[in-house]
Image 1 (cartoon, rainbow over the protein chains, first blue to last red):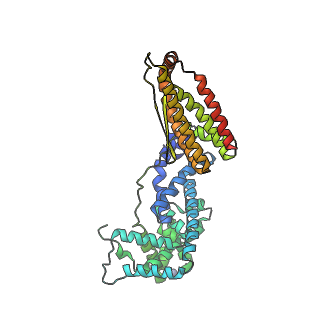
Image 2: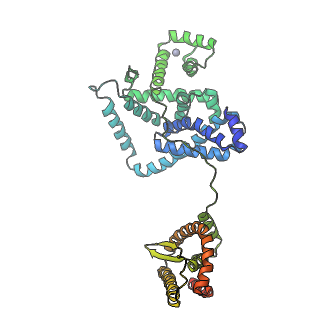
Image 3: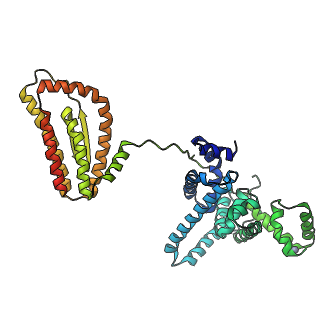
Length: 199
Length: 228
Ligand SMILES: [Zn+2]
């Protein structure tokens, strides 16, 4: 059954239809939030809030064909709110030596990943942690597009619609996002060789 | 083709959203331009790395269920919202209402109320069907016990009141509401039995229920007075 059929059933009183939508979309939304926020607990909160909001507002969705876009929009707004909340929190504690902290973080990453004697090929989980860290370093606008494109597999036209921007803007954010990621990973000495051969 | 034009099409090429003519032109430029080739290779590498990020699988499943029917506790909370302010007056009225239920129950059953560390323990045992040979002394003892237990309970309430701990009283009331709810459930099952026993007690002991209701009136007056 398609999403819009399920929506129709839900709106006429079938709660089970909504649970089917949750079952279908919970994982993509969770992954989106996880990559955006980099924290499983916050990602779970955002996912749950997303579906609660969807449950309440589904009646106001004009085009049921665009359920996925709409759902991602809700999740994105919640992720942005969460980031804003965090920034406020972090600014208080890091105001004094924010640059210092950044240097320390960078230094610790360099220690871990640029030791020439260390094996070139990293453990898969380590690589994933580094990639997540790099993703969190690029500007939010670019990160959003990178996640939607690379991890959610959306088309540029879908991303443009979701974000309310032109297709060209979506493409250029992706371009700058990938370039920024490449630079960060280069700094940390992470390249294609970091990928295990046996994977 | 300029390098800028070529770059503007990198994303289309990388994600296969490019039409064949544009692709040919771009590939021709890449053949001749090492700068663009390098940049594209870098972007491809970033992409390849990103693809190492796995799809996480949540370890939980959200399920929406129909909202539960209003519980008695919910009703109690709502009802309390309608009760008069200030707080203590409201609490007193709530208590008085609870008392009505309690005294009536207490008159039918051997009710035991104890107050310990901020919460009430309410136990209720139905009386055994009274023996026909229940003496007036036994009747008096029974009534006295009932009174003293109830008065103990009231004394505890007053002690709490004197401490002027509104919060505590609120908590007590909530606990009380829970106990009432439990009692309500129990009462339903016991109602039939009580009805039969009522007749029996009445006949056998001749206890005037009027006495109990008189006590209740005093009690409500007293609590209302204290609440002012
Ligand atoms: Zn070029």
